[in-house]
Length: 375
Image (cartoon, rainbow, N blue to C red):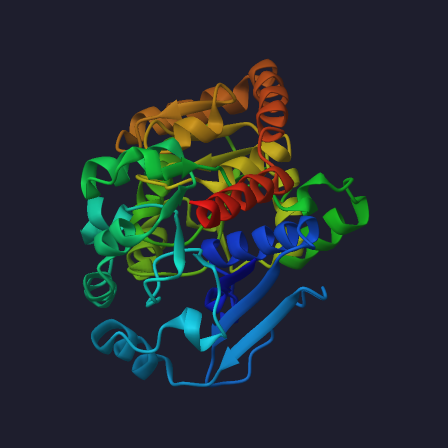
């Protein structure tokens, strides 16, 4: 069987959530399947460094078309068909919404992370909203032979918003990077602590700096707490991040708030481990990977009672209304003051995190790929 996979997201300089998902999926999928032939498609008019999957049944298919022309051609001219461009494949897997025109003969599998752009369009730039209109995600989903939703919440959104037949949607949760299963390294902890000049006492947030992540509520809640802890915010500046910085500049606790910027993968685990608690008051998530990562590190978690976050956290965290700043502040204070509750949530989180693994995810997705061909 000839399988095509779109890996254009792996050409990004800084990996997004979809990039990390794609890398981890490929890392396991190509490890467990040595029988089928894989063709990894990407398009880049500049020099890029890609992860190397060195298997005899894996072939990279690089093209150098300017992306704007390439995307417009596929969207409006329906040319080229990617499956034909890479030599013909039986099934083509796309790990997100991308311009991906395929021939009628090729089976199409689309991985859907969330429909946040439909539910909260105001959280996206005009350029992003226009891009979503151009690619017509609803039509892409309707034309796909199979959809893989990373959460039950995302499946529900696909059914309710796009009227997709639930029988062609398979819920397969994403896994956890193997880095989080490695033993703790005291030297690495000290290195990361010194690198970012951290105190011994901080609450932690990791994620993009954008309106959907609700950092404004986190900063306002932090100003209300009585506990003497720092607030460490890690993640890349995204759309409207300047509004977050303005709020920070006006904060009466400005000297105790620290922004770390983009965090490389090798530093993530240490930042979680050294934190007192992890706080993630997002307004909407398709999955909520940082919550899973925090639980895998044994950190007590406070997150929002909404979207997929309820699925990921299970009974292993405190759930709050992300719009209620007083409730968030109270939850932070109560959790920091209650060591017994911290221990309970830590133990539950470690158990909950064991339910998510990339080997299991890859095996389930391989079943869908093979099922797609048979049907």
